[in-house]
Image 1: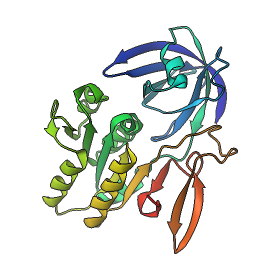
Image 2: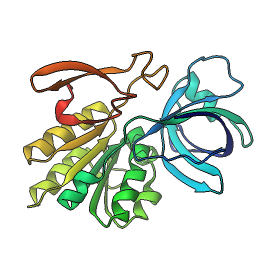
Image 3: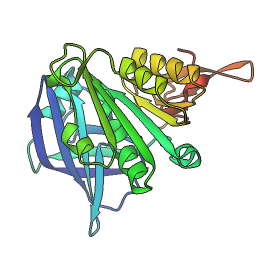
Length: 264
C-alpha cells in the first residue's frame, strides 16, 4: 500500500453515465486481480473521503504504473472524479485488499467468471491472468442494457468463451446472467472454480447455482469505505465459518471472500 499523487492521463465517458479514468502512478506497483485503490481529486476538500475503485487494467512503463478504473457516476465523489482532466492530480492510496487467487482454477483446470454492471471492471485482470496460464475460462457478463455493458471489447480480445446477457435483450441473450450460467452448467460434466463480482443479488444467486453443481465460488464484495485499510471498521460484513459467526472487513479480509462463508 502506497499513498501517492497520480496524474490523469486520459478520461472517457461512455454508456449511461460511466467513466473510464487512466492514471499514471509515479512508482512500480504490484497490482493483483481484484484489488482496489482509494481515489480523490487532489484539490477537492468536499466530499472529504476517497472513493474505492477496483483496478480495471494495469501495466508498468519504466518507473511508472499506468492504471485504469471504470465507474458509474452516481454521487458527489464519482462526479468529482468524472470532471477531472488530463494533467490533473489525484490522491491515490493502493493497491489494497485481498486478491482473487488463480490456484483453484489451476487445480481444477477451468474457471467461470460471472460479472455484472459496475462489478465487471474488477474481473478483467483475473480473466487475463487465467488466460495467460492457458486455463479454460468462460466469461459471463450481464447488464441492464447495451448502454450498461462494460469492457466488451477487452474481454472479447481474450482467448476465452464470452457470453453476454442484458435484461432488456438489447445485446446478447435476454435475461439475467445467472440464467446463462445455470444453462451452461446443466450441459457440463466437469469442475470449475467460479469467480464473481457485481450486484449482491447476482453474486448470491451465482453462489447458489454453483453450489448446486458442487462448485466453490469466490466473490468480490462491495461496501462503503472510509479509509480502505481497516482502521475505521466501516465496511464489515458477517461471515459464518465452522458454526461460528464473525464480522470481517471488506477492505482487509476482502474484498474477495469464499462465498459459502458470506451471510448474504
